[in-house]
Image (cartoon, rainbow, N blue to C red; front, side, top):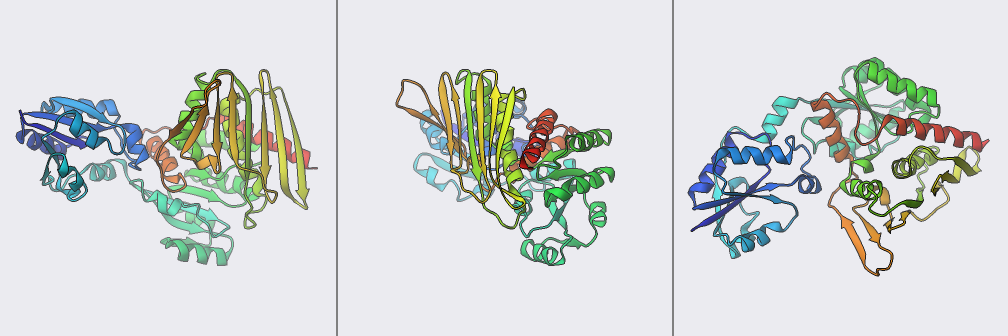
Length: 434
């Protein structure tokens, strides 16, 4: 019996997929089909997979060609599968020619011509449309949105605006953005989504104007230091059925959701302590302290909860800028300590201590690919990891794409009460400054 194996995502199943499976089966007696798992797709940067794994498996089954279906869950699995299932031939589309030649040591390689004129990418573009992003910015730094937006089908930063002519000219030249605007409202009119990347004092007005104009908004948080204003913006977005989304990329990265699953699911027991530190010195951004604080406060609220009993803030300033602040939160059964350095350096780290284990992330933990799990009574350290490149913006845009495709305005990664609570905390920090 000749055994054949092939692999694919099989998203938005079409005639090309059907033909590949049909012809693969013709090359042998028994066909095994590997369908890529969702975490594997995310880890390798394939971000626009529309159908769930269950739907993709069902569509392969319906063809009647697959004798067995397996899930491809990690890079390098193919060699193990070929050996495990005693495969005679690996069949794949000829657009992959040369990429899998190393497997010829293990089995015969067969490349099939693809069906012309159709692909899942083409179907996505025709079905889900195209969104032009406009960016309002007051520094010459796009936060990698220009590059990473292009990695998600249907998204492109086409427009840019700045109050500073020199910044505007430098942005357009550096990132080759198609259109530049002196007028913010002119840019809003020509864009589908507005990315607000400017000093905190300007964010609220820019966000409100974009929402009033019927545009979806992505913004660097915090949007404001006033809780009534963030509530107003959330209410306005709801009223107009628009997306209002914070640019906090880490919550869209798989390894962070692994961490949440372990802490919220009780896998390290009851949480006793949350300790988090972050620092960065960037003189181009005024009062960077508040932007950094958001990255520490969100995981605290997700892990420890919104209902702390007491909070106190120790703030050190240099003129108008906060150099360093320590934020201490007392919860009914634990404590959270957050240290944020602006010009004063602190070691970047995140530590969560539970009754059954401790999770640690070191370095730039807010964009980390891994975390360590330390278990009491054991010298072994378990490492949980995933693969991603860039700064994570493409994963945020992937979530934005899903929301637009499903006409969903509420994010499943950041909840409204969390957004409001963060602004309330920063509002209290502002009072402690004085």
